[in-house]
Image (cartoon, rainbow, N blue to C red; front, side):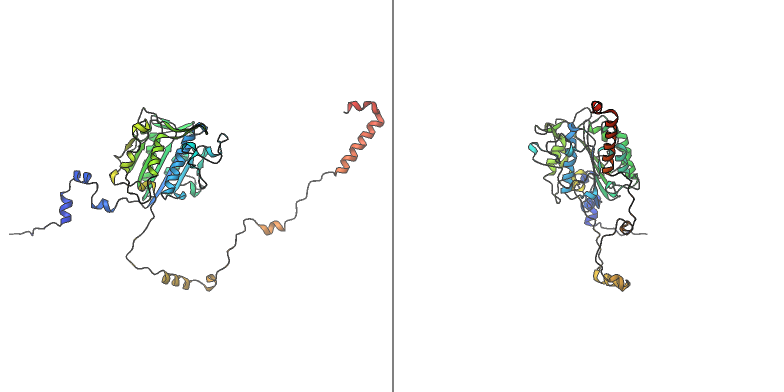
Length: 390
């Protein structure tokens, strides 16, 4: 007769074994999720203003305000792709050149001294935007215009402009549809270009832009529901236009209270602009996102983390440096003063023969020729014909 030894579960096993899905959701997180809050190691941001012309000043201010916030929370310019369809700072109608204000009475200049615009003016197109997301860009494209993300990247995508049910206008000449945007996100997922993605859009009927999303790990927010307009805010008499849109204004007001070590989560962001403030009804979608929004920190998308690898081994940098230097020839160990490389063949230019100039008659020759012509004219016709000359 066979007998089996009864195994007594450990406290951790019994706790996990008795926790059903309801307890998991209500408790907020399990032990694993508490430890691994997010699997990302780097952050990226793609900030897009799709509107031209002076009366769309607020859309540029929206984008620059988000740009200012993510930089303050730690995302560097090298990880931000900024697309502005118009340069309001240099617009001839701007009473304060080289400035873009987001608050009335010109209190806050969001243009600043260190704005790096990657795509401007007519470079902001549907094609270029989709190429940035999917990585299908020409090899000659500079690094600053590339989204060099990977499968450990958390990406923030913010868009603002004029839109409608299922589309967003670019430059008042073309449109991107919600289907095209959803397919671009699917390409990003298939090509392992993101870990988690936060999509925010401030436009009329903005919720229609995330209805067709089907890729995992996407969280989406919009300023208005289908059939609603997204309204402007902060009119300024000195500038003559509205400075921001309502939804972005209150989102940025919320972000001003966030610091890099903040524990504020996404559920708090969902509540920042109720209908009483925005007039429109903001929406959000979280069914594609694998984590509970309550456990997703604001800084998981608006901030930045540094990639750190932990090892239990002791590494001696001095020893490795000594081994490396021993392998180098003694001539290479000698330090030489730095100097600039010659960008032009200066030696060839100096010894090059000067180019011969084209021949031009001297000024005295021209003057003498005119004097000769006048003398011949007087000798032939006399003074009475001078009126035909002057």
